[in-house]
Image 1 (cartoon, one colour):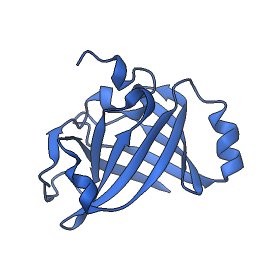
Image 2: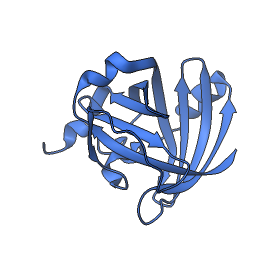
Image 3: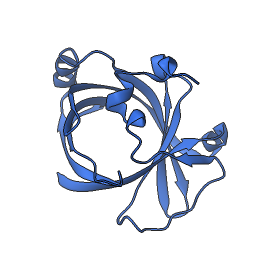
Image 4: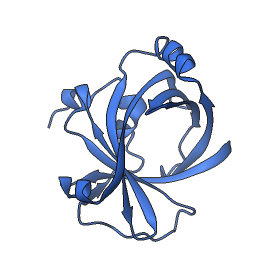
Length: 159
């Protein structure tokens, strides 16, 4: 599927989102390529796997090209073995807020302690409900991109 992804990212200020989560899943992902102008990601979640190519972000960090294709679990396992070092492991929660669904990622391993909420929008100007647990916006801040978290994990930051 070809598309432009419009997404905003936020830090999460409390664990209150968990009581409203509709479901959750474990995700393991790695990167075949983390070039700033394009990333190629392999992701396994539950009993599904996919390869995703993302382009460079717009100047405001709100949108970028994204292409995604479903692959088999054995293909994903083989490709994860070829990925750059630094796999990302996280539990993703889906939390409804008004008309939207937030995907809230609670990172594990070297990124433990980091929780990020993402919301996909139809337009850059689209309004959305902000739950009480939604913290500071980090849209466009490269250090919060999964491709960079795989290289410089949260535990290595000066907090």
